Image (cartoon, rainbow, N blue to C red; front, top):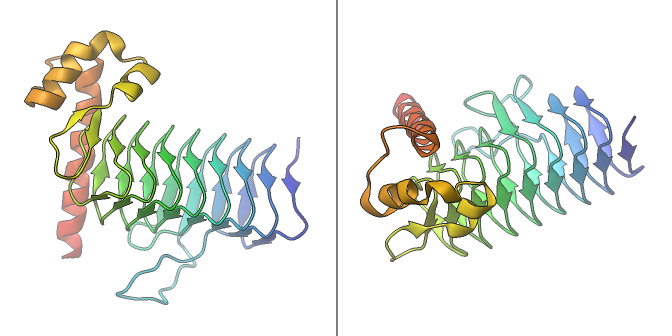
Length: 229
């Protein structure tokens, strides 16, 4: 039980930690923040500062928050900022944020997401289960990165990225075979190929469930953008 918190770490406000978390040297945690169990924060990780909003750079963040699940690894110089428009920034379970990753206001990262070094997300993005953003890539506001997809190193995702795809600038979408195998979808390879390569969604089954969740999230992001003007 308990947590391993380095003496140089700064924890301020309403910060609720579960058990077996490691908070490394010079980390800064600011509440309201809820964190689950077995999370590892390396050195100089910053969680819970206000989002960087050009419309209101010094907005009142007192009722905005961050929620983080379990078994996440957050490496040195990564930042996770508070909500701005939608109250909360969330990270699920088993997420890996590598060195110098930026998770902005109102972002939501589902379980098993991987953001490699120097990935930068813009506000209000959604990164769905099992997605991987390669070295130095970026995502613009309100874009949805679909489940089990990968965005190429150095690329910028300006449009929604469909599930199971490899998104490489200037090339047609192809199948992210690595994720298909890793997450147990190999037996559904025919349905995945039909969806990724031909745009046909299966009538039933787990691939359809994945696509429906992705499409629901896309509609939510588009409505959010319309409300903000």
